[in-house]
Length: 170
Image 1 (cartoon, helix red, strand yellow):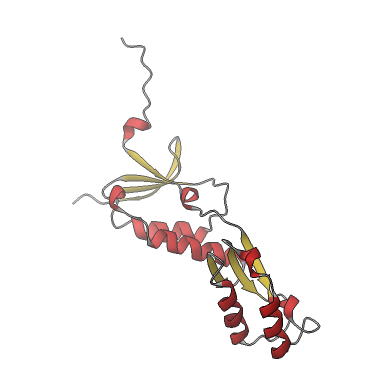
Image 2 (cartoon, one colour; image 1 turned 180 degrees about the vertical axis):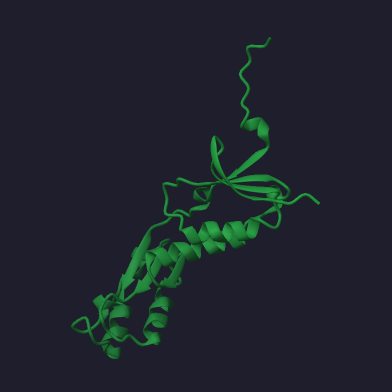
C-alpha cells in the first residue's frame, strides 16, 4: 500500500475558470457632469466648452471612466459625447453609466473575446466567491458562451460545486 497522497481534484480533469483572473487593472472613475453645470442644473455651452479645454485630463490616464450626471438636470446627449472626445485619448475605456455598468461592459468584452478552445468537451467549474466586483450578468454571459461547447458546467469550488449543466449523451 502506498502512502502517497493523491490530489483527486487535480486528477479529475476539471477545468476551473475564474472570471476574477480577467479583471483588468486600472482605476474605475466616475465623471459626474453635475460638477460642470451652472448651479448643478443648467449646462451653459460656452462655459462648458471652456472648462473642458482648461481641465487637466491627464488624471484619467489609464483609467476606466463612467460618465454620469447625478443632478436632476436635463443634459443634452452631445455633452457626454464632447466629454468623451477629451477622455478617449487618455482613458482605457469610457462609458455613459454607473461603475456597475462599466464593469458589466468590461466583462462583456472580456467574455466575448475569450478563447473557448481549452474548454471544448471539458468539465468546467465557474469559480464563485470573487474578491473583485464580478457582475452576475458576466456569469450569465459566460454560461451562454460555454454551454454549447462543454460537457458539463458547475459553479463554486472544486471541493464544493453546484451542478449547472450536463450535456446529454447521444
